[in-house]
Amino acid sequence: MDREELFERLNTVFRDVFDDEDITVTDLTTANDIEDWDSLEHINLMAAVEEEFGIKFTMGQIVSMKNVGQMADIIQEKLG
Image (tube, rainbow, N blue to C red; front, side):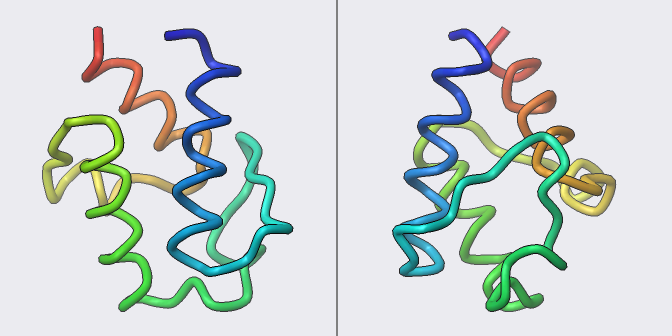
């Protein structure tokens, strides 16, 4: 899967989780960029991303993600 397709799927997940059709994430998007992205929504987001891509993040991976680009890197690595 190329990065463009990955981000299309991530955008769908983010829009569903945050119930906002205007969200478009990039490599540099962080929780500070999305109004409702708090610790509770972060858990929902991680679960939704795992379900979408059929992967499981480790706790270490979750806490190390500083932006959506790092999340995408981990997803691509897991999908190999």
